[in-house]
Amino acid sequence: MVAAMSELEQQIENRRARRDALAAAGMEVYPHAFDHDLEPSEVHRRYGELSAEELEEKGIELRVPGRVTAIRRQGKLVFADLHDGVGKLQLFLRKNDLDEDGWRLVQHLDLGDIVGAAGTLMRTRLGELSLRPARLTLLAKALRPLPEKHHGLKDVEARYRQRYLDLATNPESRRVFEIRARLVRGIRRFLDRRGFLEVETPMMQTIAGGANARPFRTHHNALDVDLYLRIAPELYLKRLLVGGMPRVYEINRNFRNEGISTQHNPEFTMLELYWAYVDYRRLMALTEELLVGLAEAIHGRPELRWKGRRLDLTPPWRRLTIRQALVELGGVAEAALADAESLAAELRRRRLELPAARDYGHLLMALFEGTVEDRLEQPTFITEYPTSVSPLAKQKPGEPDVTERFELYLGGMELANAFSELNDPDVQAERFRQQLAARAAGDQEAHAFDHDYVRALEHGMPPAAGEGLGIDRLTMLFTDRHSIRDVILFPLLRPAADAAPAGEGDEL
Image 1 (tube, rainbow, N blue to C red):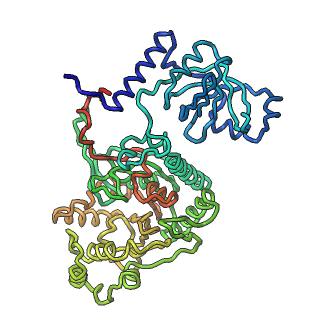
Image 2 (image 1 turned 45 degrees about the horizontal axis):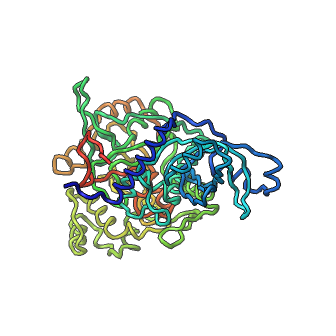
Image 3 (image 1 turned 180 degrees about the vertical axis):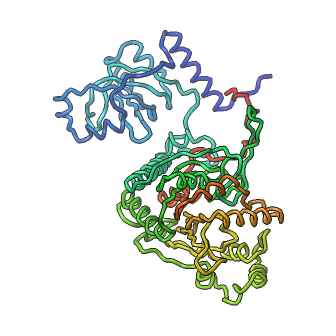
């Protein structure tokens, strides 16, 4: 007994039959290219202000491709909307204007099909800018239907798994990624104008360095060597400072084998920049200037809308030490910050998890993250991080347990991390040894010992400051999206329960 077809299976079968009928009539159903003039949104941009009389006088002939998103049939007259992901152009299709193949295609047209239309630009009696085709070409037959027009792809997980459908049906999703691209272009333009050189450093590294994080491991067969996907490009970029490149930056992916949340994805995009002969204070001013400029360029003013609230980017931004933030914003008594024992007691009192490493620095950070982070909505530089959690940062003069480091918080999220770079090779080697001890004590995120990096420092690295800024979180803030998955085109997801085995396709 044959099981009844589902509605989707029936639609797919019908579409395949229409495709096969077109192919049987001699039509190429998946041609190689379409020589075109403009896409639908550009047609509107160039000619949208012309009246019907002006269009008729000019006799504008165009070849326009796009996806069919609406069909309205009226006998020998058919209206169809051609969409390019940004805007649509109406097609005014008449049987008398088309040859036999063209009208056959109109009769076999489905929503989602991609076609190319060649004809004359006009306005209908209702005044809508339209193309009146003399030729219609099938470019790709859509065998599966798009999500229902008026509702789009509403299932959040489906939007992430099938981003192509999300982009095809939700214009707001496309806008997010257009803004992301504008942010990256704006950052490059900002840094290039200030003499920074964009570079690329290895994605696969023999030592996972430049941050405290758990790496992904891989293996190179030809060399028979284990490698790590990089957790940060920092140590390679600072080698370039040694080599005489005083201002460098990289915008690229990092990979960290850690948890997934609304603010974390295992692969993410970072800007990292290094500037010789300055300290971390100079980077505070640079960061203010960069973000204010991006906000003004994209939104027209130095502010962002975030979760219904206004984030004011007008400089100067607030500056607080970690201890000040804990007292003023976290409601922590000064006495609780006295030593490691009192910090641990405060964490227990607040029912916060104690870190694996129980030294003063890790305990202080655990308390800060549990009580203050999400309260930092307006732009705030948090400074004076403990040395034990900042193995690559230079110590504050006269205070060996504190480093010249800041993190920028905005919208309750950490957005950037920067510090004056440690360039004393002996101190750096000792910090690496301390990290090895922490790793032996159970801290899986402790930094490895990079002997070649220490050797590079022994050749002399100029005083410098470096910063990492998260592109994904920056895009979240600029687009008012509250999950990092909304701003990554293809975020990592657990395989769907009904997914086909590796190497096998979906029969439908």
